[in-house]
Length: 351
Image (cartoon, rainbow, N blue to C red; front, side):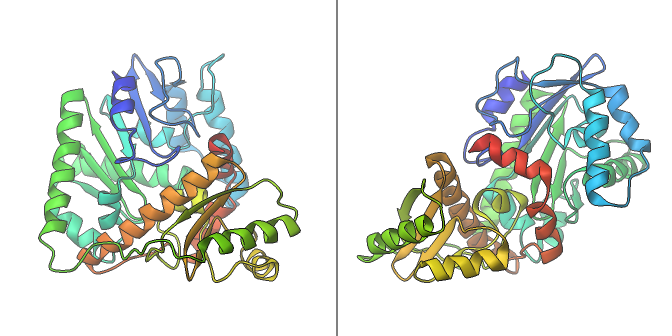
């Protein structure tokens, strides 16, 4: 059943690329999606199997104050909890899944949800639209997030005598937890209908500002390829699109992983790309010129993902206007994702 649920919520409406994760609990074991794989591509034999009792020992772990050493601690503990001869690497959010009592947990990043979670009024709107849910402010993914959510779930259970079926993470996405597959589908449908209605009743224009590709876009692409080759990047895939009204920075971890934090704006040149690389430590995946938008990558899949995530960011930007406007990730949060080994691993699995 968890495979079926993974496929059901693995479409582009719910996740992009290798985003999102799913799990189920059976006889003291947690079956959880491997990191860097797609929900649509999972089979019953794909899931990483973990000992729940061993995994729960993370709750009492004394974390190293250094973030790199702390994540190494957690990685070692998760490997110890993973059953032998199990393929793949467990999702870094496995301890969070384990914190829920519900049998099934599905975590996705729908655009219509992130229009709320990535908005300035997200927490306030969430409390009105989903009064029985749990909202958690943005926290760096990994051990810190898992521990905080575990504590919040415990507090919620003590206060309400049950746990929330919906958990919204600011600038991230949503967890849905239940012990019935039928209830899982019902909750997702209700969530979509509630937010869709809120957007439809907004008096603000929530459409993406988009133009058709201009005549000079092909020349811009040629300049980009030449500039990349001058910088030693000789294998590149290029995708062209019309110009879209995109955000000035990243909304969520997935946007950073697949399209980088910031687009390059202007006519691409060797000097311009070098300046971008010196400022951000990488070459851009999204280039916005006067004539349109270009996505580039070392593989076709990488370029496609960059364009998909950029369009997703443009849609979130538009939808967030219904709830006070966009809220981007701050520099400190952004830097953590950019330098996090776990996200580097996930990106490589999808390239």
